[in-house]
Length: 205
Ligand code: 5GP
Image 1: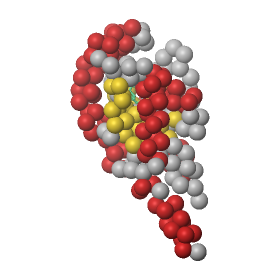
Image 2 (image 1 turned 90 degrees about the vertical axis):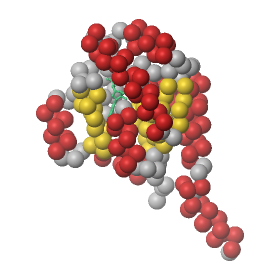
Image 3 (image 1 turned 60 degrees about the vertical axis):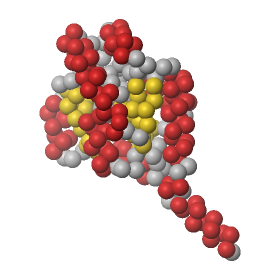
C-alpha cells in the first residue's frame, strides 16, 4: 500500500494570486493534484465548469451539505464554497499530494479534521500592492470589490494560525518556496516511520 499523500491548504486574501500560484505549482510539479471546489458563485469570464470550480445552484449545494459530501464548506462574500470530501480522500489514499485553495474559515475546519495537513498562507508583498491587484483585475463588481478589500485586513490576521507564510512577491519564486515546503514536509520523520522500521529490519537480517 502506498503512503497517504499530503493534504496541503493554501489560503490568502483575495488578490494575493492564489489561483496563479496553484497553476504554476501544477506546471512545475504535475504530480500535485488540485481539489476542484463546488461553488454557488457565478462563473467569471474564462472560468470553466469542472476545471476552476464545479458551479452549482444553492439547492444543489444544500443537498450536498445534507449528504455530508463536503470535507469543509463556508460562505465567502455571499456565496457558498465547499471541498468535495470523496475526491480528496480518494487522491490522498492513492498517495497523491492534494492542494486545497480555500478561505481561512474552511482552513480552520480542515486544521481540526486533518491536523497532519500542511497549512500555508500566501501574503501580498504590501497592502498597496494588494489593493492594486484586486482593483486592477477587473473581475469584480463594485460591491464585491468593497467586500473583498474590507475582508483582506481581517484575513491577513488569520495567517498566524497557519504553519507557513509565503510572500507572493514574484510567482515563480513564491511557487518554488511552496514546493520546498512540500518537499521538506515529505521528509519529516513522522511521515517516514515505515521507512525507518523497514531499514532497521533489513540491517538486522
Ligand atoms: P473566488 O470567488 O475569488 O474564486 O474565491 C473566493 C474565496 O473562496 C477565496 O478565498 C477562495 O480561496 C475561497 N474558496 C474557494 N474554494 C473554496 C472551498 O472549497 N472552501 C472554502 N472554504 N473556501 C473556498
